[in-house]
Length: 199
Image (cartoon, rainbow, N blue to C red; front, side, top):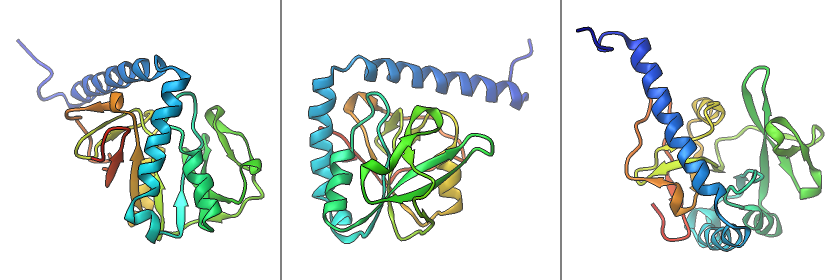
């Protein structure tokens, strides 16, 4: 009997289905959290980020504006602005599947953009440097730093362009898996910060 062995396209399709099933399961877990849980767990995660050595030693922080019940790092980014650091947020272009980061000096400089995510306005200056730390959102992670995003590959492609960027991910414990199956194009995080520990 023939199997999918030897048919890479069938194996790739099966792997995509598995990855999507893991993503969907973790989206359900995250969406089941109460607003109070999100706020409290995000507060602890922000405290961990702020107390890190890399934060003290970094001048440029690439963050993100949370969507739905993603870990809310806005208090962390607000403190970074207060501390005089350069803060930038992503802007995505669906047409060419490209992402860039633009600097903000206030959260009043954002408006709803692609995927209903709040993004910096077009007047905000573009920043392209590898001398920065990126706070990376995701759907599911494992303890070795592997990450599944939303499937668009925006961050992985950005890191391929700027491989020297440091990569830190905030996540809830319910977003962690023991081990994720990854592709060669998946970029690993340096550390993952949860409300319980640092991986």
